[in-house]
Image (tube, rainbow, N blue to C red; front, side, top):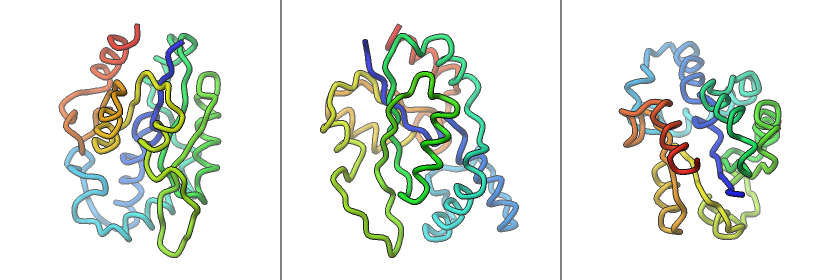
Length: 189
Protein backbone atom coordinates (compact mmCIF):
# COMPACT_ATOMS: atom_id res chain seq x y z
CA UNK A 1 0.00 0.00 0.00
CA UNK A 2 1.44 3.38 -1.01
CA UNK A 3 2.02 6.07 1.61
CA UNK A 4 1.14 9.70 0.91
CA UNK A 5 2.67 12.44 3.04
CA UNK A 6 0.43 15.53 3.21
CA UNK A 7 1.24 19.05 4.31
CA UNK A 8 -1.71 20.51 6.22
CA UNK A 9 -1.82 24.29 5.96
CA UNK A 10 -2.82 25.48 2.48
CA UNK A 11 -3.09 21.88 1.24
CA UNK A 12 -5.84 20.37 3.36
CA UNK A 13 -7.25 23.79 4.27
CA UNK A 14 -7.17 27.40 3.08
CA UNK A 15 -5.17 28.83 5.98
CA UNK A 16 -3.58 31.73 4.09
CA UNK A 17 -6.88 32.80 2.54
CA UNK A 18 -8.69 32.69 5.87
CA UNK A 19 -5.83 34.33 7.76
CA UNK A 20 -5.65 37.11 5.15
CA UNK A 21 -9.33 37.92 5.64
CA UNK A 22 -8.65 38.12 9.40
CA UNK A 23 -5.48 40.20 8.89
CA UNK A 24 -7.12 42.63 6.46
CA UNK A 25 -9.89 43.25 8.97
CA UNK A 26 -7.58 43.70 11.98
CA UNK A 27 -4.84 45.68 10.20
CA UNK A 28 -7.21 47.66 7.98
CA UNK A 29 -5.42 46.52 4.83
CA UNK A 30 -6.76 45.32 1.50
CA UNK A 31 -4.27 42.68 0.37
CA UNK A 32 -5.84 40.44 -2.24
CA UNK A 33 -5.23 36.70 -1.95
CA UNK A 34 -4.70 36.33 -5.69
CA UNK A 35 -1.91 38.95 -5.53
CA UNK A 36 0.15 37.09 -2.94
CA UNK A 37 3.46 36.12 -4.50
CA UNK A 38 5.27 34.84 -1.43
CA UNK A 39 4.63 33.34 1.95
CA UNK A 40 4.68 35.52 4.02
CA UNK A 41 3.10 38.09 1.73
CA UNK A 42 5.31 40.91 0.47
CA UNK A 43 4.75 44.09 2.47
CA UNK A 44 4.15 42.38 5.81
CA UNK A 45 7.11 42.22 8.16
CA UNK A 46 7.95 38.68 9.25
CA UNK A 47 7.45 39.41 12.96
CA UNK A 48 4.07 41.04 12.27
CA UNK A 49 3.09 38.09 10.05
CA UNK A 50 4.03 35.45 12.62
CA UNK A 51 2.28 37.30 15.46
CA UNK A 52 -0.89 37.71 13.40
CA UNK A 53 -0.78 34.13 12.12
CA UNK A 54 -0.30 32.78 15.63
CA UNK A 55 -3.21 34.85 16.93
CA UNK A 56 -5.34 33.50 14.09
CA UNK A 57 -4.28 29.92 14.85
CA UNK A 58 -5.16 30.33 18.51
CA UNK A 59 -8.62 31.79 17.93
CA UNK A 60 -9.79 30.50 14.56
CA UNK A 61 -7.76 27.54 13.27
CA UNK A 62 -9.97 24.82 14.68
CA UNK A 63 -12.93 26.29 12.78
CA UNK A 64 -11.24 26.21 9.37
CA UNK A 65 -13.04 24.03 6.88
CA UNK A 66 -11.16 21.51 4.79
CA UNK A 67 -10.89 22.10 1.07
CA UNK A 68 -14.03 20.41 -0.28
CA UNK A 69 -12.42 18.75 -3.31
CA UNK A 70 -9.54 17.38 -1.25
CA UNK A 71 -11.94 15.98 1.34
CA UNK A 72 -14.01 14.48 -1.47
CA UNK A 73 -10.88 12.82 -2.89
CA UNK A 74 -10.18 11.30 0.52
CA UNK A 75 -13.79 10.08 0.77
CA UNK A 76 -13.55 8.38 -2.62
CA UNK A 77 -9.94 7.16 -2.58
CA UNK A 78 -8.49 7.56 0.90
CA UNK A 79 -8.79 3.96 2.00
CA UNK A 80 -6.58 2.80 -0.89
CA UNK A 81 -3.49 4.42 0.65
CA UNK A 82 -1.74 5.13 3.92
CA UNK A 83 -1.65 8.80 4.83
CA UNK A 84 0.55 10.81 7.14
CA UNK A 85 0.40 14.50 7.94
CA UNK A 86 3.63 16.48 8.09
CA UNK A 87 3.41 20.17 8.89
CA UNK A 88 5.51 23.02 10.22
CA UNK A 89 3.68 24.69 13.08
CA UNK A 90 4.74 26.34 16.35
CA UNK A 91 4.94 23.84 19.21
CA UNK A 92 2.34 25.71 21.25
CA UNK A 93 -0.27 25.41 18.43
CA UNK A 94 0.53 21.89 17.27
CA UNK A 95 -2.26 20.38 19.38
CA UNK A 96 -4.83 22.57 17.60
CA UNK A 97 -3.49 21.48 14.23
CA UNK A 98 -3.52 17.82 15.27
CA UNK A 99 -7.12 18.06 16.51
CA UNK A 100 -8.15 19.67 13.23
CA UNK A 101 -6.55 16.90 11.17
CA UNK A 102 -8.20 14.16 13.22
CA UNK A 103 -11.55 15.96 13.15
CA UNK A 104 -11.71 16.15 9.35
CA UNK A 105 -9.26 13.53 8.07
CA UNK A 106 -8.96 11.04 10.93
CA UNK A 107 -10.68 8.33 8.89
CA UNK A 108 -7.58 8.26 6.69
CA UNK A 109 -4.69 10.19 8.28
CA UNK A 110 -3.49 8.21 11.28
CA UNK A 111 -0.10 9.77 11.75
CA UNK A 112 0.33 13.44 12.65
CA UNK A 113 3.87 14.82 12.58
CA UNK A 114 5.22 18.32 12.86
CA UNK A 115 8.43 20.26 12.62
CA UNK A 116 8.26 23.03 15.25
CA UNK A 117 8.27 26.46 13.61
CA UNK A 118 10.67 28.72 15.45
CA UNK A 119 9.37 31.66 17.39
CA UNK A 120 11.40 34.38 19.12
CA UNK A 121 12.35 33.56 22.69
CA UNK A 122 11.42 29.90 22.44
CA UNK A 123 14.05 27.17 22.62
CA UNK A 124 12.91 23.76 21.41
CA UNK A 125 15.00 20.64 21.18
CA UNK A 126 15.27 19.76 17.49
CA UNK A 127 16.04 16.45 15.89
CA UNK A 128 14.28 17.10 12.58
CA UNK A 129 14.99 20.62 11.36
CA UNK A 130 13.12 20.27 8.07
CA UNK A 131 10.45 18.13 6.50
CA UNK A 132 13.21 16.50 4.43
CA UNK A 133 14.96 15.44 7.65
CA UNK A 134 11.75 13.79 8.83
CA UNK A 135 11.20 12.06 5.47
CA UNK A 136 14.78 10.74 5.43
CA UNK A 137 14.37 9.37 8.92
CA UNK A 138 11.10 7.53 8.38
CA UNK A 139 11.62 6.57 4.72
CA UNK A 140 9.02 4.76 2.61
CA UNK A 141 7.10 7.82 1.39
CA UNK A 142 5.61 7.21 -2.05
CA UNK A 143 4.27 10.74 -2.63
CA UNK A 144 4.87 14.06 -0.89
CA UNK A 145 2.38 16.94 -1.26
CA UNK A 146 3.19 20.49 -0.13
CA UNK A 147 2.59 24.10 -1.19
CA UNK A 148 6.16 25.18 -0.39
CA UNK A 149 8.58 24.79 -3.31
CA UNK A 150 11.60 24.54 -1.01
CA UNK A 151 10.04 21.52 0.74
CA UNK A 152 9.13 20.00 -2.64
CA UNK A 153 12.67 20.49 -3.97
CA UNK A 154 14.16 18.87 -0.88
CA UNK A 155 11.88 15.85 -1.35
CA UNK A 156 12.82 15.65 -5.03
CA UNK A 157 16.49 15.58 -3.96
CA UNK A 158 15.57 12.52 -1.88
CA UNK A 159 14.03 10.92 -5.00
CA UNK A 160 10.52 11.17 -3.56
CA UNK A 161 7.71 11.78 -6.09
CA UNK A 162 6.00 15.08 -5.31
CA UNK A 163 3.10 17.30 -6.16
CA UNK A 164 3.32 21.04 -5.63
CA UNK A 165 -0.12 22.10 -4.42
CA UNK A 166 -1.28 25.11 -6.47
CA UNK A 167 -1.16 28.38 -4.56
CA UNK A 168 -0.59 32.00 -5.66
CA UNK A 169 2.89 32.04 -4.07
CA UNK A 170 4.32 29.08 -6.00
CA UNK A 171 5.01 28.12 -9.60
CA UNK A 172 1.72 26.19 -9.85
CA UNK A 173 -0.23 29.43 -9.34
CA UNK A 174 -1.95 29.02 -12.73
CA UNK A 175 -3.34 25.58 -11.82
CA UNK A 176 -6.43 24.91 -9.75
CA UNK A 177 -7.65 22.19 -7.38
CA UNK A 178 -9.07 20.17 -10.28
CA UNK A 179 -5.60 20.08 -11.88
CA UNK A 180 -4.17 18.94 -8.55
CA UNK A 181 -6.74 16.14 -8.24
CA UNK A 182 -6.00 14.95 -11.81
CA UNK A 183 -2.26 14.96 -11.10
CA UNK A 184 -2.82 13.10 -7.82
CA UNK A 185 -4.91 10.46 -9.54
CA UNK A 186 -2.40 10.11 -12.39
CA UNK A 187 0.43 9.50 -9.93
CA UNK A 188 -1.48 7.04 -7.77
CA UNK A 189 -4.44 5.41 -9.44
